[in-house]
Amino acid sequence: MALHFTSEQRLDDGILERGFTLGEIRGILWTPGSASTSAPAPLILLSPPPLGLRKTYPRLVARARHSAADGFATATIELPGSGDRPRLPGAEQVLADLRRAMEAGEPVSDEIIDALILPLVDKAVPEWQAALDALLTLREIGGPVGYSGGVISIGTRLAVVEPRISAAVLFAGSFVPRAMLEEARQVTIPLHVLLQWDDEGNDRQAALDLFDAFGSKEKTLHANMGGHTGVPQFAGDAAAQFFTRHLK
Image 1 (cartoon, rainbow, N blue to C red):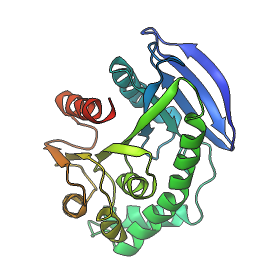
Image 2: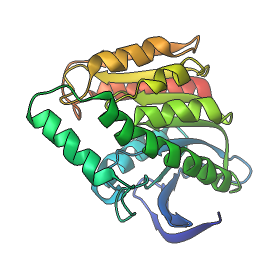
Image 3: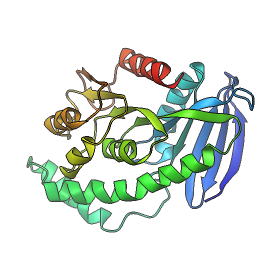
Image 4: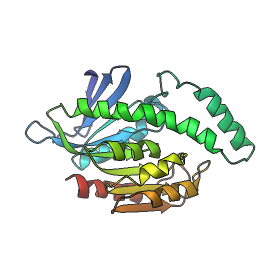
């Protein structure tokens, strides 16, 4: 798939923000003012929550600004079934089943979790790889490459199948299919995992089991009190330091 730029603006701090399309997929690329063909910037893939880029743009651009200050380019793409993209087959029924279970105070079954997460992972990971293929053809972008964000199962699969990703910051804020535990054992790159201890609606123990399963020799778990969107600033700073150690 070819990458086509659709918009361009220069942010106040010198960051170049460009919207792009990759086939039917929308994305955004942020490059720091220091990036050039003679000094290409390392790249961090910013995986958004599955709420659509328009809704999550303020959070994403804040992360991009932080990364640009450290000399990194960042890019994000619209996840399958999010934003204006067609919903994944069966997604509405699965979401209805999920809502019913949560409203009744019942455990979310493995069947619901598998139907919710695994089709998303299967479709999103090849799209991320296609985006990476296209982004790395840009002369102002170079390696190494990092991955940052959730859905944590997408990051887990990418860490297994994509050798160009050298390090990952994973957000433990989504349901985890049991099948991902076996994939996690194949992960060997350095990991920095963020876990909100009181994340409503998500299974803390599943996140801990996934962290335990990761096969990486270097893996760090930062657990903080608070809900899903309450990640403290110092935890984000520690994640930025992690990328500086591994991508520069």
